[in-house]
Length: 312
Picture 1 (cartoon, rainbow, N blue to C red):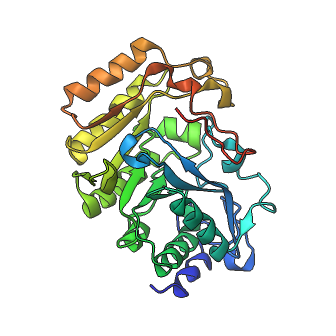
Picture 2 (cartoon, rainbow, N blue to C red):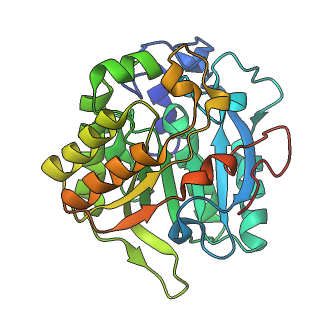
Picture 3 (cartoon, rainbow, N blue to C red):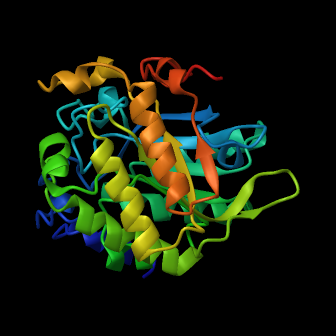
């Protein structure tokens, strides 16, 4: 699908499993409330993330899109991910976004990450093509909540070098309660299977210690939801491979939680995290990263700043 044709995907939008069917090219708004007539970007910044192989020594140039096709009740990026957030001050052109990215590449970033990209996939592809036409060849990271469709992900072959999906929920009721998506476990598993088909379990690292191709599955352990986390790990082990790289995260911060579950109004306990780490080992996983338990205090962005993240 060519650069021009790719924008036809907005005409009856079914980019994500919501399948709203609205014509975003005509300004109609579906679940994500994002037009197809322009791209809205929360920020573009050099970011040192949770996995060293993704960030590298110079950081990754991350493009954070506005809005999201999930509305998680605990999202740390809520300033830009909430679908009622105004877009008017964030719209930009493909050319200008591309120039902002290449400026950071010239400053030392050695990869590009697109964060919450699903609902802006045609614009993302156009940005990648524009950057490549300018002579830049760096790894592209697709940083997604995994609420994606396999047939859409197949379009990304040749554009995406590293898939970095969250696998949030293994229990349908939890996905419904926390992210308005009771089909999340089935949808995410199918999506990640397609990523696995494209990249397999081998993470290719360059001479600088930075990933250039592969798949890393992130999972955020939520307080009061150990069973959910173990179910996610069981699904990956049973349906994919224990050779996959897993980033097991403990950075949940109750500051962002907006519902009423008392367990979610606190941080993760050592006992909860230990149970999930034990399951990780017992299931046979051996590749990946495990966060320090106190990480909840470090990954709290302020998107009103040009440097939203406190680097650690």
